[in-house]
Length: 421
Ligand SMILES: Nc1ncnc2c1ncn2[C@@H]1O[C@H](COP(=O)(O)OP(=O)(O)OP(=O)(O)O)[C@@H](O)[C@H]1O
Ligand SMILES: [Mg+2]
Image 1 (tube, rainbow, N blue to C red):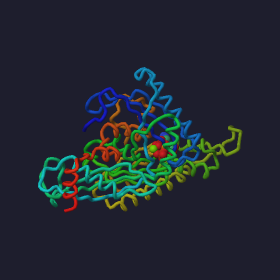
Image 2 (image 1 turned 60 degrees about the vertical axis):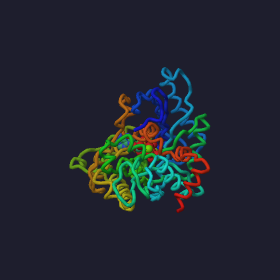
Image 3 (image 1 turned 90 degrees about the vertical axis):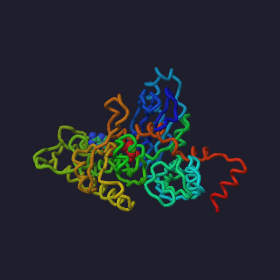
Image 4 (image 1 turned 180 degrees about the vertical axis):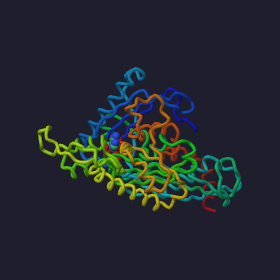
């Protein structure tokens, strides 16, 4: 796949999540788009709830801090130059998939890159709506004169080219708020990428991406879904539930603080009950009680009985979204589960049951040398943003509009004739 950035150039990813804000700075190692991570910064999100900015100042300062930490770590390589540009995730909750089919006339000539771009530009112009931004324009399959299964149309002759195109749009207002926070930190946004798409680019192996796979990214406030087939993302959606809902349920159910609930979830939580759960006792410090010597004791099974229904509900919603897409059969039998909340023990088995597919846990696969603390499933989106910009820049809407050949007058007339006759 082509790298749109020359060897040695520095790129940076900013993952604005509901639980954490993470920044990875990478340097392109070679012509194949391999990347060395040279700076990492992350910190707990502030001013952001379920992918939506709720406090501009807090969100801006959290973004600034995580970028600053990454910059400091990368300073040896960047000679201390501040970052100027970042690739940013679009929270899954603010995106929408549109599946379109575009026909362009070829008139017996060999298909060129420009013909495909014309189809993409045509699809883009049809989908433009007020209050929505174009995020991705992805050609997913081609037919020439009705013949299916065309993998690479460029160079082939035909009369008619049909292109299936997956367009992802994002809701303008929430995106503008996120962009505002980033720009206030003196950073330009070079590209936007749907969060579950980035996660898939980081976690999937080639065969999964090719033969069909569903990525389920369980984050703090949302669970993102992306379906891949034929090496492309063919659908994305989300459900507004994530790990924070589980934590809140625990805090309410045991009348304890959010921090204590979070700790209990990570230390003793499980998605499915085991036979020893009744015998294992856990200390619970009731809310407002200062005295740590007098905790309540509850059996672990009680904790599991709070966690499991929320996870089951989340998986049921994910199952329904996949079914509603009408693409479940195309997605095949494989699910890759990632995101911070995927780490709860037993979730893989539970997901297998609810989604009726083969489930594996995913984490960034293609950024060697990441420290343990930032190579886990919570950083799949962050890692994937770097891959997106090195491997998929041709799916950025602005690139497409800019690169549809600016034809001379006569060529424009010919194009018009081709399109309309
Ligand atoms: N060891 C663990 N066991 C269970 N859950 C965990 C563990 N570590 C983190 N989590 C959960 O992961 C969630 C955060 O995941 P992640 O960092 O992927 O979210 P995010 O990207 O900030 O959020 P979003 O994608 O929804 O905007 C939190 O709810 C947290 O409780
Ligand atoms: Mg996330």
